[in-house]
Image (cartoon, rainbow, N blue to C red; front, side, top):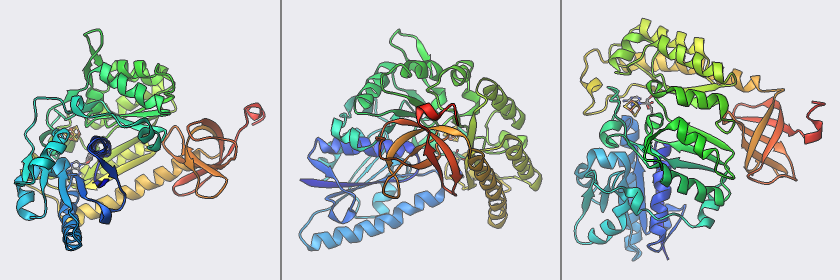
Length: 452
Ligand code: 5AD
Ligand code: SF4
């Protein structure tokens, strides 16, 4: 049997796409391997969001090329595919920079991979034109055994692309316009996942809360409505969605946070900056105060809500005062966890052409201050759960024998001693200690609850 090695960079969309590629190649006789050295086919599923991520691909390709040569000397063939957003953005340039690459395929075209692999025997190929057909109609579902092996928490792509055109971001160019999958397809996939033991679904999309898919009734469904329907799928106990734009938090979605117990009280809602001037230059179309008020509205219906966000420091023109506005917003809101980045100019985006690019040293200093504050907030949030009882979805054996590990509603890793529980159960755990990356707890037996 031939072997395929897929390496994914970047966001959860890529993780999902990598799984779908592996599922499709399984029907072509490829089994997945975690060891690149033994792979007949190596796929790098790439990310273009920041320069560092994009450059990583070329250094990794250098290593894959060496491997290809070594295997060739031993009489074994290795084929190399570059997929994902660097493929989409750079296309032919990749073939030019790295002669060992056989196929370059974009995120909307990878359903054609088997065909491309056959055709590329005679010439190296690039396929990045946005296709008319929907790749999801052409992608086979994985076997039940495969789905079971992937665990009790699964990603499900419901939306792709973005129409927001934030001035720093390549996504609208690499992933194209917003497209929502029809409700019926999503439900089919959710049922299939639930039948294989999946308990938690994370709905993913580049701008997932802009979801506007065709419902079975012919009407356009919003994300709030879709979540309500998914909560009825037997077996599915937890729902999440990521990643979202503040402008797309509509009434129906906010209401779902209040009255849908399966919807976890943890929301990734990137704000990027706390300065109105910078938010405007970023084309975010909201102010810092509008974000604050939005959070208040969601917290009103869901007081347990914990938040996470993305931040960019050193966007062109960002002054010390703008940066202080970001620090103040972070202090005002309080985030349970966050991602923060130095602004990285991306070719073809408006911000890359703006004057007043911020010096690297200033970016580094701001990032370090912001990250200190965010880390303090993360630790405070984690320590704040000590003494609380949290529902934990069990995902895998713990680090030590006799331990079992899972996730809290707030996506915190939780470990506790148990030899009676099984993966996939949701267990009430009293948190007794917060480590730097995990919480430690003890099982609260149903009868002990009142005494607790
Ligand atoms: N530079 C730095 N960070 C960026 N992001 C997107 N584009 C850029 C860029 N050019 C960040 C944003 C986004 C996250 C996925 O990546 O914060 O929310
Ligand atoms: Fe990029 Fe997100 Fe803005 Fe869309 S909403 S352009 S994906 S940062």
